[in-house]
Length: 233
Length: 288
Ligand SMILES: Nc1ncnc2c1ncn2[C@@H]1O[C@H](COP(=O)(O)OP(=O)(O)OP(=O)(O)O)[C@@H](O)[C@H]1O
Ligand SMILES: [Mg+2]
Image (cartoon, rainbow over all chains, first blue to last red; front, side, top):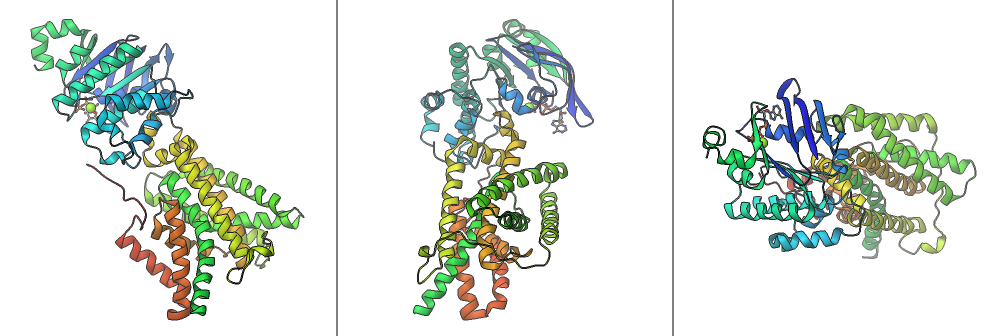
């Protein structure tokens, strides 16, 4: 579904990613793990077209390097950025509607209902300014907004960051559900390696912008040496 | 008392004029989160265009439609050819660009119009007039209300309007949901230039058409928009009427007409200090 081949990218003159190669299967979940500053967010930003890159980034076989972020979104790539990307001056409902901006089908209202059922806390705040939501609520909104796109692939940047364990569990549960029901492919960036390895089928570990380890999530999680030295749990 | 009422109504008439231009300012603010200082001069230039179409013998509403459409194109081109290349990374760059545009549009008006003062027709039939407001004043208020409703419908009720507001507020996130941010800016400039053209065609029959026609009106419209809330079309219209009444009463009963403009300036400064989001505007929430 998504394949990066020898991708290098950076900010201005500062290179950050060095020849990163990774892939997400159709309907699969790939986790990208690594310490602070390893280049996880940079990887996602590069896929979204925010940073100039060399190498190849293919969505369903089509190279997207050099395309603008709105065109990449219209190819079915949705993104939950690390800052949640909330439209703070707009209402919760307007945020959800924006998620469906690229869609022309008549099922948008139905999808909004669906996410409001899943996140009742959003429902009670549907007409409030989204900037007034709590961090956890904004994370739920960001995830719902991304899914409103009916994406082929979802890029998630630390969905658990700063959230209470209960909310994290809720969000991961939803991801599992959507993945199964809609056949969604997911690229999941996480510091919470334990959670990420449970949800994913494949995992990569980044260090200083390079892939230093990759494999089946189950194998990585069951290897004590790897867990201790790379995953820190 | 009758005299006082007359002065209030004269203020309402002025307010209708300010409101029409204030809506153009609100539109550009919704699309860019900035004020276009050239809004008035661009409107004047549009109105000169209309004058030449009249001069060529076209009927009023044909000219009106052509001018609105032509101004949309002008606004869109200005964004593509001038604003975008310069970049608006800093608010200062945006101000510099629009002040530059102000001077360019003003010179262009001088160039096409010369120093002549021209009469400009009003389309409104006499029966619209009453003891208190002339036909043109009543018509202007009506047109402003129509523009207001159209703008509110566009911004609040259409996906396109929502995308435009989103693109202005958060361009990065807008890209993530597939909004073509650059296109939104271009169209936003086009729409605000079109609204400005309508304002210009409403002003010209009263003020006569000359290159500096909109100068002071922009200031009052700005004061009105700030008073009511630059991100709130309804508020900006109410604010403009309030400024029209305030300005007129002040001129007649307190300061004399020379200080009216100064008082509008003072109002702007006071508002910017006390309540930058306006009386009806939503203050931006920021959560860090
Ligand atoms: N806007 C930027 N400009 C310049 N350098 C940046 C920028 N953003 C990140 N970097 C640098 O790129 C490197 C990778 O950062 P990145 O944000 O991708 O890390 P990360 O793996 O997401 O870390 P974290 O877990 O803390 O979110 C870091 O060395 C960082 O200093
Ligand atoms: Mg990060």
